[in-house]
Figure (cartoon, rainbow, N blue to C red):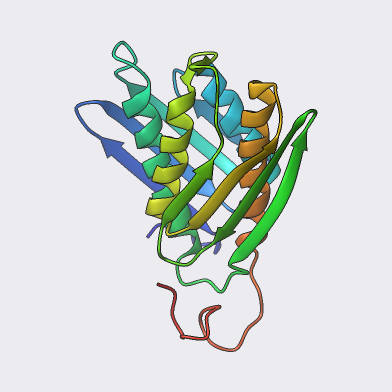
Length: 201
């Protein structure tokens, strides 16, 4: 766990494998600082949207085997983001649940989450294109699966409407950011967790 002396809800994760080198810093109570460089420009754009609408400070730096494809890099970024989020909320009493319908022009996406401690993803966002920019659309699901499992989030993402797949993808990342902000707000509650069981998980 890595929290600052000022009590900020902060997580920092480094991960190095034979396929990628990733460093992620998350501050859930920031909202103005973003330093994102993944080697995949469209993913940089999506992560910036997530951070802005999630009102978090976000540092993501990655180098990966993009000469092979983007899969390893995207998945490892998701793993690190999930672990950093888990660090940042650990031992805090948070709202826990959040859901929204996010609009981006023609696109409408549902995002719902529960910080249950039982990380899982239910993803129903079909894409017709293989890539948006240099980001493989199949890697979008892998990213959110890695985030959900490593953060301990039960996460549902569903496309309701939309023909422009850039808009659909952007609504997904914005909606996740909005839900993350709502679910991680601190709440006053008797006891240390927002669960009738007395613990998460």
